[in-house]
Length: 157
Image (cartoon, rainbow, N blue to C red; front, side, top):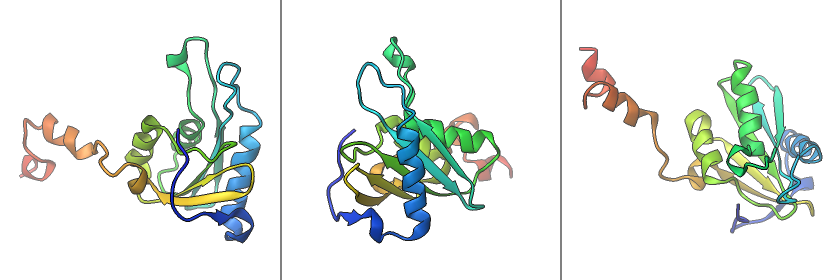
């Protein structure tokens, strides 16, 4: 995770819906299980219908089994049948951006939504999934391969 560059806003100057989302991520951060890194992360995603799903990072002694807060929040929404996502908030002590794996998961479901990256001092950076991961691995790559190098449109003709 790294801190974003660019224009910094203050949480208190954001629209109510974004402030509420950041607060949900901050509260989720308090439930993080991070005994190894001591780096607590909270995330929250809002759906088009207004539902909010939050998540915290959960570490494991076998570090490859650790899961990030962003993926927890996104997977909770997706597993509850939500497919139309509106915004994602991530809160860390320093305002760190999502890791590459989380960026790819975001790209799978909502590459163009705002991603609010906040620190504990009230600073926030507003980015998009596309800014965070300009060259994602698109689903279309798999569809083309599954049809022997032929795109979905050609395969159905």
